Amino acid sequence: MTGPVKQKVRMMTLLHLILVSIIQGITEFLPISSSAHLILLPSLTGIQDQGQLIDVAVHFGTLFAVVLYFWSDVRMALIGTGGLARGRIDGRNERLALCLVIATIPAIVFGLFLKVSGWNDAMRGNVALIGWTMLVFGVVLYVIDRRAIEQKTIENWSFKRAFVLGLWQAVALIPGTSRSGITITGARAMGFTRIEAARISMLMSIPTIIAASGLLMLDVISDANFAGLLDAGIAAVFAAISAYIALAIMMRFIEKVSFTPYVIYRVVFGLGLIFWAYL
Image 1 (spheres, rainbow, N blue to C red):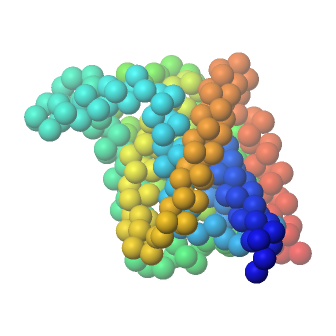
Image 2 (image 1 turned 135 degrees about the vertical axis):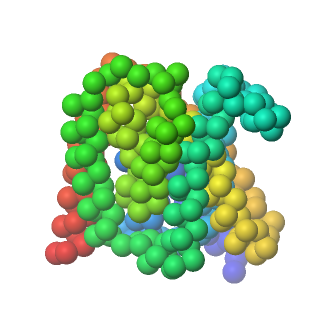
């Protein structure tokens, strides 16, 4: 293979990495399902699936973005984690840290079940399933967001509410549901304001991303080589940048408007996928 041909192949790979990273970064924290977009990318474009190593890398990139954006809350949770280690649960920081732990448990249990049972692989790439979950959970978000009575803040986040939100989050393991979308929906149903619902949802993403990425890392790290790790690093950087920008825009947007534009996108996208899958 000649030099120019090699360079062209490498450029296509780089463009693919950037595309995957930007899609992940933009959609991870918006209520429109990042997993659906990443899973459908090979099906809709014909390009090769990015693989689990890149999936892990872009998730770590978005993890960096949300930690940076919500650093004051993350710092409180880290301090609270130290307090929990010393047996304290009565402080504000400790309550926040414990709520995040409790909210993560259902997703871990359900995720392990899906992995062991093989359902995780069976659902991946199911266009019809993704179309229906995009549509149905988009409508659910719209209805609950419109009917919610705004009164609660993160100070009202109890252990019981954390567990219930954890159950909502576990549903997001079904492709197309959207982790941020379903947890925001659950928080709005509990009476949290839009800003506080999004804030809680973003904080819940941190331990969830760590747990999910750690589980995937066990499968891919042994087969990783230098070229693969280099690609993973590039993907993580672009995912972090795009995720931070998307997160900042969303937090400002929902304060003045609502989640309706995201719902419209979900409904249109979902209907398109259903039409494509069946017809």
